[in-house]
Amino acid sequence: MPENLTGTVGPEQQFKNFLSEGKFMIQRCKSLNQFLFHPRVAFPGSGERDLEWVEASGNGVVYSSSCNRRLPEKGGDFNLSLITLEEGPRMMARVEGIDPDKVEIGQKVKARISSLNGEPAVIFDIV
Amino acid sequence: MDQNDINRLRGKTAVVGLAESGCGLASGWSAMEIMATAVHDALDDAGIKLKEVDGVFAATAFHSMAAMSLSEYLGVKPKFADGSQIGGSSFLSHILTAAMALDAGLINVAVVAYGSNQKSAGGFKTISEAMPYEAQYQPRMPVTAYALSAKRYMNEFGATREDLANVAVSARDWALLNPRAYTHQDGPLTVNDVLSARPIVDPLGKLDCCLVTDGGAAVVMTRSDRAKDTKNTPIYLLGAAMEHHHRMISEMPDLVQTSAIESGKRAFSMSGYKPNDMSTIQLYDAFTINTLLFLEDLGFCKKGEAKELVKNNNTGPAGNLKVNTNGGGLSCVHPGMYGLFVTLEALRQLRNASGDDVGQRLDGGWIDNARLSVAHGNGGVLSSQVTNIWGVSDTL
Image (cartoon, rainbow over all chains, first blue to last red; front, side, top):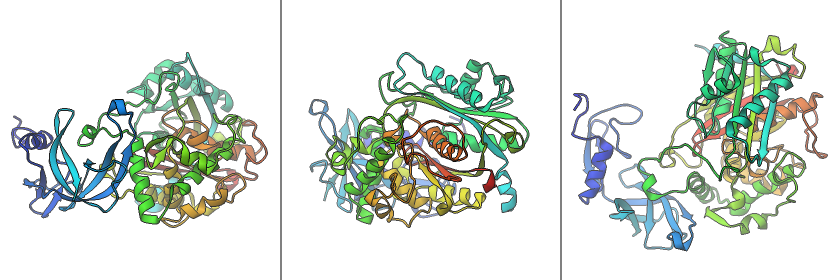
């Protein structure tokens, strides 16, 4: 392991490893007291490296949403949204448990860890 | 460095030749063959010999090192080359880089080129890698990204799908006047046609999305002192600026404000002209939402008001704003990276008004007395924004 890389694997793999353990973790910059997503090696724009992993509350609000049309034999239509997390950062995810074209901006959502194509994934449900 | 130094590029270079090649369907031709043909045609248009080319600028979705591949294919040994890939706006940034290299004396003749055979080769082509933290959700990029922006735009400003559809209707009306447009023979569109088209990613339907065609294009640039002596009307680069704030749509700071706000401000400032001085407005309309965003972000109206600007075909041939006068990416041509076609139309309008023969249009397709054009390029998912301001000699 090169000396300037801290931790056994990089932030992207750490995030995936946490998901595999059933945990939705995001990073927090200690000196700025700000959260960030997606995971990085330093805070974007200013470069602080004192990042720690914290468990996300899972609470969020739909920032925008789309209904992706797909043939039924290929799995049918699906939702794809941008979610603003309670902690501040935004992420792409799917909102499930509702018709994919019925997800509206401003709706409150809650994260759970599910799987997509055999990989663990953060999915949101309408609260 | 003060603003005068930054603005030293104003009017220092000009396009002296242009061409397109293989637009529509070019079955049996490779992307390189289409691109190289456009370069040779543009040099013929300029009356400049291939052996004089010493600057090569290119990007495609088919070549990882496009400038090098094109130079080799042409048999050119460039003293400066740039194959920067920032999506469909690449060529408008190549024009800025070419202007810098020409002004610095590194090169004397630059070609900026693009080519694609995506349609005849099977459909939309990209060499974009999968985006981390997005790919597992399987977005239909790039459409999903633009749909997310459109949905947010409609929510924030009370815009409707009809407002988006107005953009497509005007674009088609321009295409009906342009025999080169892919949809020239297809007849007009109604708002209802757009609303009832097959949904792709709600709120965008098929007619909110650009065409998928083949095609290539090229322009030839020189310093202005030489441009005066070429056989066509030189069109001068008066302003150019670029900016980008994100690569992934999930990282876009605000889905309804693009970095065209910044690129436009600086490009207009360099040119010494204002948005309302523009005789023609050429915007990268990969999707209907683009035209609304860029009209606002470049300063043609306030944020949220473009839906009023595009009503009643005001951006069509009979309207007050001459927007995407070739028919745009929506109705003229879109081989995957449309930026150089935005540029070509900005230049052609100015050359036609100056008396050059740059092709035939039906009545109203050419803008009388056009002196200034803005060409605005977009790349990625509303990511890279590049603005070029072009003018005829009396605007210098």
